[in-house]
Image 1 (cartoon, helix red, strand yellow):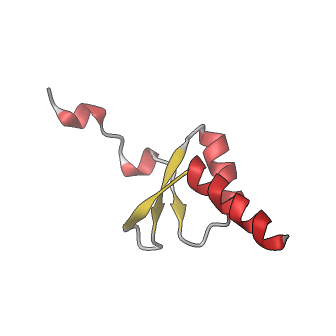
Image 2: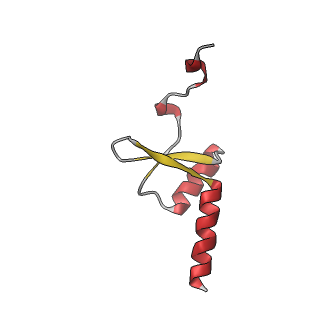
Length: 67
C-alpha cells in the first residue's frame, strides 16, 4: 500500500503559527473540528502539535494563578 494515499497536502491542512493566542487556536480547532493542530513558524517549519488537553491544562493553570 502506498503511504501517499493517507497524506494530506500542507496547503489543505489547518495549522497555527507560534504567535496565535489561545482564543485563535481554539477557534481554528473548533472551525475545522480538530482535537489537535500543528504549530508552524512564520517560514513554515514544524514546531510541534498542540492538543485540546494542552489548552485545557493551560487554562486551568492560568485560572489558579489568578486566585
